[in-house]
Length: 102
Image (cartoon, rainbow, N blue to C red):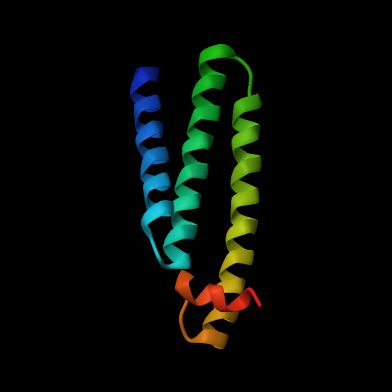
């Protein structure tokens, strides 16, 4: 059996990798992947804390499934927006999005 501390360490590494990717990337697709990585880290935390606090309960697992469903919908909308941005600017870089302000 894997200790809970190891899973929490993996979750923390995933969260920091997502934050680093979000702050340093210039492509909207890479930023989207970083956000997904942070959401998956939160899902792992839901499952681990559910197992630790309520071994017989399934609330953390249901929250994780709900979060995965929302992340899938968010990804579909974000990819549709990126396709339209690519059609308008022929690039999905963040620096091109500044043109959309005005």
